[in-house]
Structure formats: C-alpha cells, structure tokens
Image 1: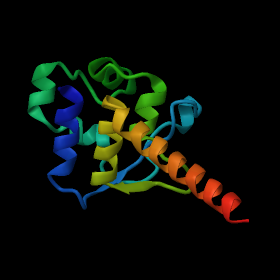
Image 2: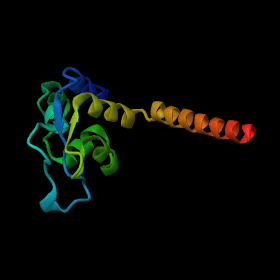
Image 3: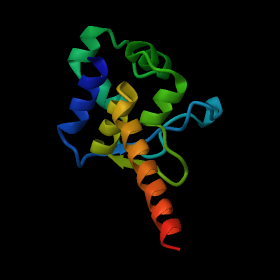
Image 4: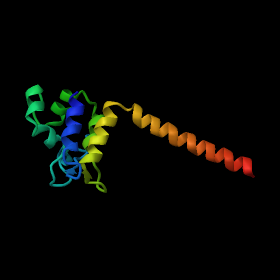
Length: 127
C-alpha cells in the first residue's frame, strides 16, 4: 500500500522530471542528488499522508525502513549514474511498481526470451 501511494504521487504528473540520487554504494561524501530537480524521496516526503503513516525523514535509512526496501531496491527506484541523472516521473513510478510486485516484469523477460528462442529455432529450421 505504501509503495502504491508513492507511485500514485509520481503518476499525478507523469512528465515531471525527477532528479536521481547517487547509489547507496557511493561514498558518504558522494551521496546526494545528481541534479537539482526534486527526487522521488522528496515527492514522498512532501505527501502529508505518508508522513502521518510514519515516514520520519528524507534520509535513506528512514525511507528504506518505512517502505520495507533493501539498499538494492531503493537504488533501483531512486538512484542514477553519471550518464542518467534525471528520469520522468512515470518511469520512476514504474520502477516502484516493479519493486513492489516484480511478477509483471518477470513475465516481460520470459516473453522476450521465448520470442528470441522461437526466432532462433525458425532460423535454424529454414537453413
């Protein structure tokens, strides 16, 4: 429910640009925003309902505990790299939904893999 609320907040303005954060494995001095746009964590923090539900602060540890995420899951949602510093809000919302319920994402991977295998089999058969 909490992850769904976070995704809905981002989907309200799907074209909003979300600034990504440094990954959790970056050194403490390198953690922080990669761009000056609001981050997904800022969007969650600005929601009074999530704060009433118990979101204590914008700190990574508080966000992880509140949403029940691991470092890797939080990085998947909010982290960027030197190449990708911004994302549209709809992409961040999709990442949140995939972390919350990875079954749909797995179905896409299985489907693409099946299509590739079928194409390889057809090509081999036509030779």
